[in-house]
Length: 440
Image 1 (cartoon, rainbow, N blue to C red):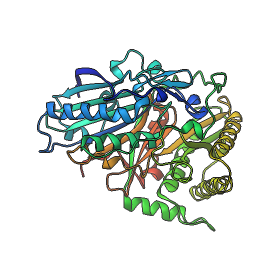
Image 2: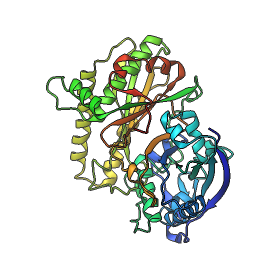
Image 3: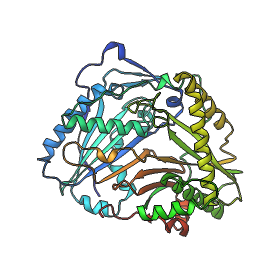
């Protein structure tokens, strides 16, 4: 698949940001995140409503300019622990694919080719851009068959998965000519404000190890039911959620692969799971809050030669989920900032006990129930949505709803050697299909 860039523009907000909104404070959580972009791809098949590429492009750029007035920090520049909301603008790239139909790509999605649908190749240094500028990049790629892909990159310094979903929904509503409720940029009112003097230890070898590879595993509704039934066979626990059951199965696969290959000398393997706090404490955190308002903690661990039992793993995941629920319930009586401070302290205490030399960490992050499949710009809903981060991090898995809302797609990133073993795991393949066609 050859993706040819047609144009690159800087899109500025349609109206100037007021002086009293010119500086946005980042939270400590924003500050400590690695230099990556939160990314989403949305694919649309040909539709008669798309009059022409020119019309579509004009609509996207005009509505993006209007949306940036509401999401003004995304058009700014990071300056240390604040964002200078100076209306510098966002990057908008147009591209074409003439040698490959969208239907061909969706029959067996290639994740290396997928990266070409992001605008990161038009900036000199993406790693630098993510912590300075551009904070937002968009790429609209038109296929000769009439289909299109929209790739969105927002710096993770201000956007988690829920944030990028809110942005895409708002942009779509603006393109449809509907009223858009302004988002809230108040994450630093919850988690403590960032301080430049504070830094976490950095793993110098991170993302410099053997080349990572991303594969897609799809759990359809019927197989998910089988998996949930299996996980529910543990005594004294309720029926697991879709995410809990898949997380337990993936964790077993990661541990089995690592033990089989003996790729590390780590004393402990650790599973880390971010939790979106907006849905857990809606009285304190509005759904439209933009920023990183997650609680991230190790939820499972096992020794070097230990083996995982799916039922036991699910029981432990459920216990950790309940512990968090109780903690949030108890602390809600205080102020929002006090709860945020307590959670930040707890996360930092948890991570201070982890060492890159002795711990092999895996992360499973859920984008499920985010309404990305409702992102319409006036020409119908996307046929496929992908969520991830760029550059891809070691041992990171993203879970996202299938188009029917019942199944789940797992985008698993592992070192290539590990993936070759992991993708042959028969227990995993009993419930998941490896990269099936999107066009069903």
